[in-house]
Length: 288
Image (cartoon, rainbow, N blue to C red; front, side):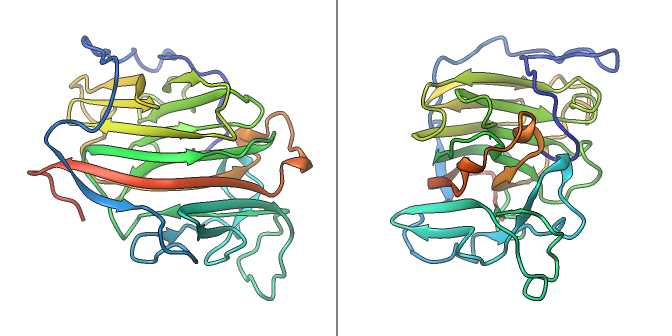
């Protein structure tokens, strides 16, 4: 969900002349859960009401004034309970149709929508591990909620890598998307590697989204069922830049890919509920 408008068609491997498809796993698991030997190293159960805890989360507002990538339409607020709050055991990220006062928000870029983009950058990052997020997504055309990761120390996108654990676009009502982006495989070249899984309750009900990331592979599952697999093919950073620590991002965008079929005013306010975030690693791996 980084730099340019995404194409709407995802398949397990989409290739162009720029790159050959990566090798896939020879053994595909039928289920995914916390791996044996992994311990909980970081979590947020969202059991303290109020604003998100500052020892765990920060707000990404870096593009508010200039406008966000992908032709997105939202302004991301910081420490605005209207856009991000913890209540009754959930983090609630709320996208609203509203304009702000530039006297109170100097970085407001005249957007007509507000939302929040929370990340663990500077608070916690992990190299490899098992990440699990239980969330309920908002329904509505024009929305684009996501659970994803970027490198803690990132360079030029997409060379340093991106893992999209879950993306949902409101006009595709029953579909979850999982994708990776690298220098060789990304939507700018038309070579991104991604796939989908379907659920009649993709929005409006809770689902568990999980990433198992090792030095050899990336596996993504929803409700314990793996559906996306990406293997380290051993050819280097062009296809596998995933040997550095990543931080986690939770956000609800408005427009962009989610707005390819317009934005429904009836979708607002749109609330993404996050029940918990849990990160597990093996003992030898350290986290920050």
